Amino acid sequence: MNKELIFLREPNLLFGYGQKSEDPKDGLTLFGPYETFPLHTIQVGVIGTEEGIALYKSFVERIKKPILSPDERKRPSFPGFDAVYGITWPIQPAYQHILNRDEIDRLLGVSNLHERTWRIVNLYLNPIIRVSQEEDVRLDSWFIVVPKEIWRRCRPRSESSDGMMPSLDKIRAFRDGQTILFSDMQAEYEDYSRMVETASDFHDQLKARLLQENLTIPIQVVLEPTLRFRDKYRGFEYGEKMKAHLAWTQSATAYYKLGKLPWKLADIRKGVCYVGLVFKKYERGIKGDKGYACSAAQMFLDSGDGTIFKGNIGPWKSQDREEYHLDEKAAKELLSMALKSYYEKNNCYPQEVFLHGRAGFRNREWEGFNQAIAETKADTKLVGVVIKGSAKIKLFRDIEEEACRYGNLRGLALVISPNEGFLWTRGFVPKLSTSTSLEVSNPLRIRIDKGEASLRQVLEDILCLTKLNYNACIYGDGLPVTLRFANLIGSVLTAVDHIGSRVLPFKYYI
Image (tube, rainbow, N blue to C red; front, side, top):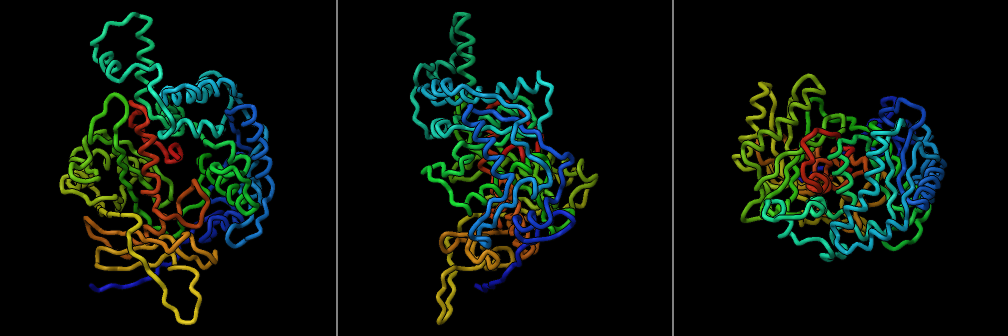
């Protein structure tokens, strides 16, 4: 086998005034965000307990000021939100809703996990609905402040028992019209049906039900320990360098959810879009259809911003392995939505579309994708790329008379054929003087499965796409953004039934 080891330079990012930097923190500090917010002050609504809202105010007050780090190279200091982004984040919320902690504790005592999560989500969801319908207040975003106990008790592995909820068999019988109920029991069973048909994760269900209600003000869910600058697992207080890192991450997320890009890719090719395929097994509630999954697509443009397209729920899971594949019709419909959205934004179709998936593309789904391209009557090139994470291959340095404390460089690639190679997206970063991996890192295994393209160009594009995690202000991620949030997006899309197929920006899902 003819192997070639190559090194790909670190992609640059674009910030304010057209300036470039490879590090998001450096770029924001020196030049400010790529897109500026049109107003001088942001308006934030906050929902939480009395203690949670007080923590929110103290957190905002803290990140408005510099947080100095003792390690400027690995964990740079945070200059302060107003200084970085050029806008004011008021300490006092534009709107606040105080939740009763006793009521939360009472609902946390509900034995059934689905009912418990449903009713606690209602505590946060109902005020947002009411404000959108009745209050004359302009809000740019919502902060959802969550006590640690909700995070612990309202997720899939939380303790649960059937409690007083009817059995799934009884609910199925009710839905099929096989039971005769008193009128006062019908509303109760309908309520239980909705509970069973929702996911038991607080974050996913709240996001999904907001989408279901057509509420388009983005939310940021944050735990009370985070606002205290404390670890949510063990409760210890962060040191100053981790406090600065947390301020960077929370502020970048908040700014992105205002609808503005903190940074974008500087050297990405024009007229190219990247579409990551999302599949999430559908095994919740009274349906229980084995092998069924929800399909979706994430499209990222050369600007770096993303859009989510919900596909169909169908029998996409393979019978013999843990893989998902669309049929011809579903593949065509999914890519057609992405192409239509691209045209609406750019008044033209893309020159190239790269489909990123975790499994090889079967002939029937590839034919569906090609049909979507053919219907546009545009000269669009389609390439299918398979990306598998954490390939079990190690690369070690062998240098005489040198203490090798770190492994390979981020950006190294091992080419094993014209269509396949390994790419290290984690590893030693000279600028940071440290590694982004806690151990000798594993690479991504990347293969051009369908279509034709330069492997080096594919590897360079994927390395670029590891720098678009706006949910964490980090130097580079281990996965490209087309796959990084696939599980999270799938969980939100399957958290409730009848979520609809609206095309929405990426910010509503993270």
